[in-house]
Image (cartoon, rainbow, N blue to C red; front, top):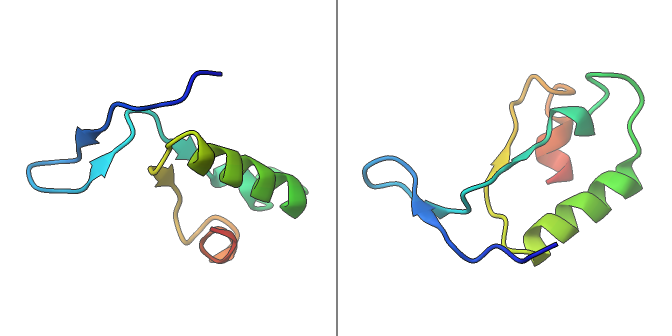
Length: 69
C-alpha cells in the first residue's frame, strides 16, 4: 500500500486532513462483535501511513470508539 502524503484543508479554516478517512463505525459492536486488538492494529496502521481523519460518532457503541481511538 502506498503511503499517503497529500493533505487538504477541511472546510474554510479547518485542519489539514488526509484525502481518505477511516470509518470507525465497524470498530464498535454496531454491526456485531468486534475485535479490539484488530481494531487497534487497523488504527495504528492508518496513522503509520499518514491518515489523520477518522470518522466516528458517540452513538457507535455509546462512546466505545472514542475511548478506542
